[in-house]
Length: 215
Image (cartoon, rainbow, N blue to C red; front, side, top):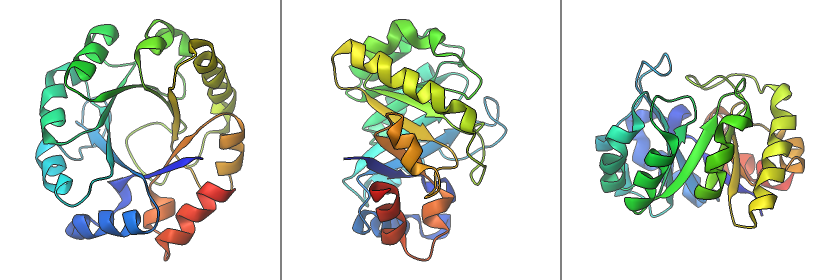
C-alpha cells in the first residue's frame, strides 16, 4: 500500500496544527516537513522549534527533509524536536556515511535524497545504510512546480537497487505529484508519495489523498 505524505510547505501556516489534524483525519500516515535554510535552496522555511510545536498536535510519522548545507550540525535538534525520519541530500557538504550514522544514533530513521540532475551513483555506497531514498522530481525550494518526467527512469533504477539490498527501504518521490502522474510514479516503484499543493490547495483533503492512493 502506498503511503501519502502531505508536505506542510503548502499548508496554511496560520493554522498549522489544524491543517495537520485535517490531513490525518483525511487518511495521511506521514507528515512531510520541508526544512530549507536559504543557502542550499533559495528559500527559508521552518526549524526545530516549529517541529517541536507541531509534534504536540499529531502522532503521525514526522518525515523531516533537510534541504540545508550542514545537516550534521542539526540532526540532534530535529531528533529532540520530534522527527521520526530525517532525510539529508547527497549534494550537501557533509560526509554522507557519518551523517547517516548520526541520524540513526539519534534514534531516527535515515533517508538520502537526490536532486533531479544527480546520479544515483553518488549514493550507491550508502544505500544499504538508509531506510529511505527520496527522488526529487522538481528542483527543491518551492511548492507548486511541475513534475519532471525525466526522473522516471531514476525512480525505477532506485527501486532495482533497493531490491538488491534485500531490506526494507522506502522509495519516496517528491515534487509535482498529482492525480495525473501518481500512477506512473507508483508503477516505477515508489511507495511513498509526497504531495504539497495537490492536497493543501484542494477543497477536499480526503479525496485528494484517496486519488493518490488509488491511481
